[in-house]
Structures are given as C-alpha cells and as structure tokens.
Image 1 (cartoon, rainbow, N blue to C red):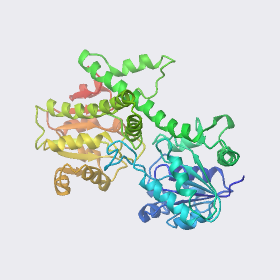
Image 2: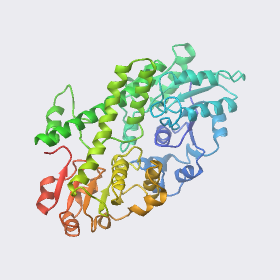
Image 3: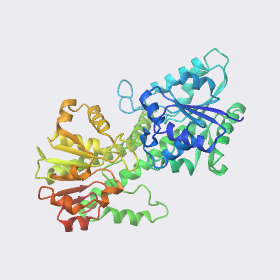
Image 4: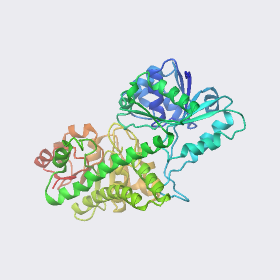
Length: 464
C-alpha cells in the first residue's frame, strides 16, 4: 500500500516537527497538519519562520523547505480527514484533574473527540495512528468507536509512539535510533503496519524500524520515559547525599557513567526534571498498576515522582535558608524558565514550582528566559491557582535583558541550562548586586571556583 496523503490532527510539539520531517523526506506525499487553534496554525504559516510556535534547533529550516510544497498547516480538520489515507492523532493527553484517576490517569477526552470526528467524516478506509502517549489498550477504545460507525468504512489502528527529546527533536527524527510501530497480527493489520513502515523507510534504515503488537508498543513508550525519569531521580537523590558528605555529584556521575552497564546519559543532577512526558507518563503507569492491584509496582514508580518533587522543594528551601531565612521583599532572579535548553516548552518546568515557593515567601521574582514569553510565564503561574492573577503580576517581573534581570538582585538562581548563561559578564553582574551576592546553580552549569573567586556565595546542586 502506497500512502499519498497524510493528515495529522494536532499541531503541537509532536505533530508539528514530526510531520515537517516526514514532508521533508517524502516530497511525493501530501502532509496536512490540522488544529482548531487558529492562533497556532497562523504561527505555523507565518512568513517569518522564526515565529513558529515551537522553538527547536533546525525546525525552521525544515518547515521553510517543505511548507507550501507538500506540507500544509490548516484549521480545516474535516477536509484533511476526508482526503487522508493515513491519519496521525497527536493531541494532548494531560493527566486528569477530575473524577476517577484524578492526578494520575491520562485524560483521553481529546483522543475520543478525534476518534468520533474521524468516524463522522470518513467515507473511505483509513489507517489511524496513535502518536500521542497513551495508556495501554487505548487502541481498543479507538476501535470500538471507529468500527461502529455503520458506514462500512474500515479503520486499521496502529501505535507509533514518539521518542523525541525536546531541544534535539529534529535530529531525533532525522536520525532515530528506532521507530516503533504496533499493529494487529492480522493480514489487514500487517498491511497497515507496512504502509507506515514504508513512509519511514525513506530515511530510516530497515533494522531500526521495530514492529510489535499494539499493546506492547503503547506500553513501551510509558516504560521508556519511566526508566529515563528514574535515572534522573536516582542521581538527584545522590546529589543531596553528595552535598552533606562533601562529595561532588558530577564526579560521581562521571565515575559511574563510565560503567558500560550504566552509561553516561541522564545522569546530570539538577533542580528536577520537567517536560510534558516524564511526570505524566509515570503517573499513568502508577495508575495502571494500581488499577490491576499491583500496589508494590505502583509504589516503586511513584517514588520517582516523589523524589523529583522533593528536589524542587529543597532547592527553593535552600534559597530561603541561605538568605537568612527570609526572602520577603528581596529581588530573586531566575535565569531560565523552559524545562530544558533549546526549547520554549515550559510544561512541568522546575522553575514554575521554585518561583511559586519563593512567591509564597513574598519574594520579588524577576525572570529571564531567551525563548519563553512573558505571557507564557504568567500563564504557568496562574495555572497553579496558588494566588490571584493580580498578585502574580504584582510580584513577578519578566524582562528581555539578562543584565537588567540581575541588576540589584539579592540572589540569582539558574533554572535552565541555556549555554548563553555561561558566557555572561559575571564580574559586572556581581558588582551590581546586593552583597553578599548569592548564586544558586540548579543545573551545575557554571564553573563554581571562578564564580567564587569573583566574590559570589555559590551553591551548586550536588556539591558539598
């Protein structure tokens, strides 16, 4: 089966970049990315590709080459569904904030809405691909909705989870270490699997295209994120031990990372992991385990989240305790708001929770991030509902100049590992701060000795 027309429902962090790379590598396939958010689609269509709604290194160049040729962004969802032979579902699956499974289970209302829209519109056979991160056996629910349309239309359901790291998403797509496709073990299911595999084979070597059952594919995504988050929480747990014993967590990480059985990746101690996937997927895994009565399994994975929350809280507490047990009325500068460098994604960023803690202590928080807007920063704080929108705007200042952010500050906290922070004129920053001048390096980014030699009081996470 040769696919000539693809539709992706959802123009977010997964759908936009993934479809852009598919369009780049498959110029003979029409790729339509659709979303009901008119503002987001307008940004994807902006003549100036530096205004794309998502910042990823290399993405602007990919979009510029493919857009208008065979890559299209639109709000015409029904039209795209009708024309497509293969439909990716790439909508948000947030953690439920209500009802059964509140705080743990994935909220599948957007997935169900997509399925019902596809069922309503489709008049020809479709391959429907789960691209969003979903609980195991979600495909079963999709099948129940799609196969009962009464129109005689055939739907084949595939699972094709993404394994992208924000900040390197384009390279992850161009040079994927694996592409996972889960399909039914039936002739039609296998035909659908091969149709999707043939798309990726335009640039991905065949040995990296893995075929599994739908259920194994869905669970593999949750498991991969759980294992990666577990490593981060493990090294963060050791960072606290390093601080009280006088060890250096970066030296410990380097020592154990040379063990080929462990490896060096995801052993960077920090103020805590964030992003759209790790916490959400682990909580989903915890909920699934509990729903099957596997309480010990659930407790094991839940501890990864508990450790991450503890790391953020203790970093904020360290700032308050070091500043003589009060930050009331003091200017605290946060450098970085994105959850990691080279992205403008702020979901579950540690900076949000550290800022919230400091605001509860009546600090005056000033924030600078090279890629995150003031609108997004304030929206993140408002979402917590800790205080009113007016209070947030009275206590929080967002600036576009890092030197302005640091001027007359009592303390600076590095929340995101942006490369530019290393190259700042730290002597001038020190001269323009209240003394003693404190730096709290939540990413182990700066040369601690150089910073101390300038005159700063420096706390680096994981260093005694």
